[in-house]
Length: 160
Image (cartoon, rainbow, N blue to C red; front, side, top):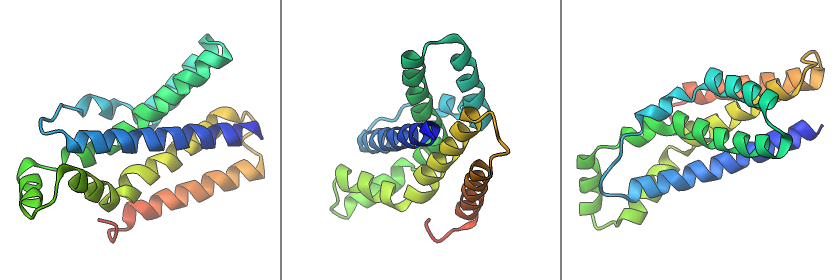
């Protein structure tokens, strides 16, 4: 059962670090190209977790998993971060808002699709990695709930 706490803690850390990075990224006036982060999808992340689990000791492995969680979250939210163009930002700021309010508004607007969905995905990936016995009904039910929730978040447009 320790895998459950590990998965939750990695997901929470990745969630908060990626939200903080997104906030800082949206506050910046000059943008950097984040398209390289798109490589960190589900398959790449799970493959790297398996690879590092064979090669590294436990303390360093946990640090690598935290870094992979953050990169996975940023890779999932790259589309959101790069979709905000400068004209929209200038229009928003012309209404009297500052950079901080713009960043917080955008993060709140896209919170579910850009940050909650990757948290659920990474949690599911870590469960798959951590359990050799995938026939455990508890593990299967968690994976099904996560999959259905991610599917619902993909189809719901009211959070846009």
